[in-house]
Amino acid sequence: MAIEQLPDGRWKVDVEPIKGKRFRKTFKTKGEAQRFEATCRAKVIENREWSPSTADTRRLTGLIESWYDLHGHSLRDGLRRRKKLDALAKRLRDPIASRIDPQASNMRIRSPW
Image (cartoon, rainbow, N blue to C red; front, side, top):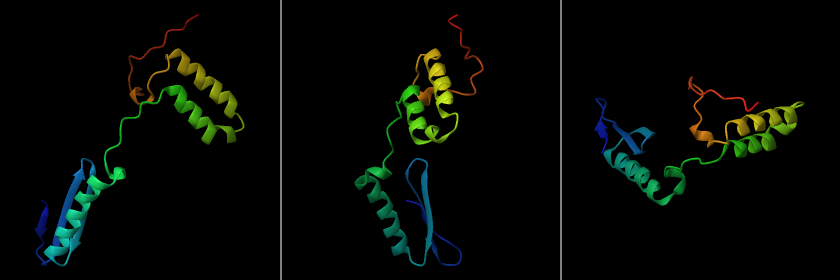
């Protein structure tokens, strides 16, 4: 419970029902602060939106397809870019997109030719 009284008499609530999602608010009374904290914690249990989402397991080709459908088709050279991205995904053996590390210096791609 993270409810504390400030020097000016107001009450500050600092609640983190989900790791990474933090809510801070000040109230005039302690009762209001307690209700706000209880509401935040109850929403985590009731509502799926507040619960942590599952890991994204889409493959790189699926991500490329979504990109093209949503944005790439409107580009003048969108089809050319998609073909290059599809070739890249094929050379990488279609990995799970969330596991790609752009900072990895040891990720070398061998040419099949």
